Amino acid sequence: MQNRLLLILLLLAFKLFSGNDDSTYIIKAKKSRFYWDTTKYEKYDRVIIVGLFQAYRNFSNEFSQFMNADTLGTSAHNYQAESNLISGISVCFDKFSFAFSTRSNPPEGNSLKGGTKHFNLGFNISNNRYIVETYYRRFVGFYDKLHPVYSDSTKKTLQSYNLQPNLLSALFNARYMFFTNHQRFSYKSGFGCNYRQKRSAGTWILGSGLNVYNLHNDSSFFSMESRPFYNDYGSLNGFRSIGIGAQVGAAATIVLFKAWFVSGYFTAGPEHQWRTYSFSGVNKNISYFSWSGTARLSAGLNLKRLYFLFSYSNDYAWYDNSFIKFRSNSITGNVAIGWRFNVKIPKFYQNFMNSKIYSKV
Image (cartoon, one colour):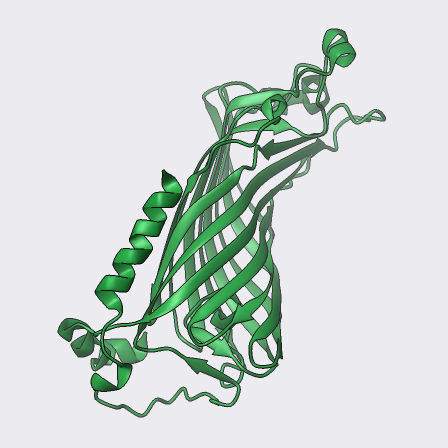
């Protein structure tokens, strides 16, 4: 049913937007201060891009402690979302893009890991100089990857992981990235859909970000066996962090025959985090300086109309303190296919493109 709905949306997009040729619509020309080398990449201004994607989304939360010796590793936990394939649709026009996904049916033979409820929403604004990426991801239901069994009975039968069906992990992330070599390098040719890199290029990245991270459970994050190792933190069942940080990094795209490409980037930097630790209704507020960043890799085919790509991303943050080592990773593997349709630009958007606001966005 879900695949049929996505197919219907694609057909509607083709009917509504496959109008006359781009050249019949004239937008008042303005000389931009932010030119780019058209032999390196090109932009599709008057097309709407509709794509379908399937994504493997995973949210992991890793705990260990520094307080007590643990030679057997009993106190370590790695809570993983049961990462099913997610189906979704993306729409891109000019500087704006939007993506929405829903959870597919769980894979067969995965009942030992329980189930995960998932929701994802993303919205981006960009041009060839910068990109502002925002998304919200919410997972409910995790299993402990490090400790599949805890009692003697389950060790004999191997029938169940340590499941946390009510563990909620949610992340809102807003990230700004500026590309120093934007005249020759196009970020969205490798991770978007309305640019096409025709020759290889690279760039340095300067960025900043805001993230709001929330982790909550109906009982302690730690198993009964591991709680004594955590001393006063043994009853910890809630964590929230609001972080503001800066990142630096680098990106590059290698292009073959003006069509096939491999693209990647990495950023990292310091982050100031305002944290709240919850112990069964009792909160402890502290602030910390830590680290966060992101890493992405993509590969695929980018033609004038058709694009097809594989991508991998990992948005990571460290929430360590003097007693607990706590890492969070939001991982996405994505396969997407899309088509660029010619469109008749509405009058209101023509006016917007000729405005001072548009030239500054």
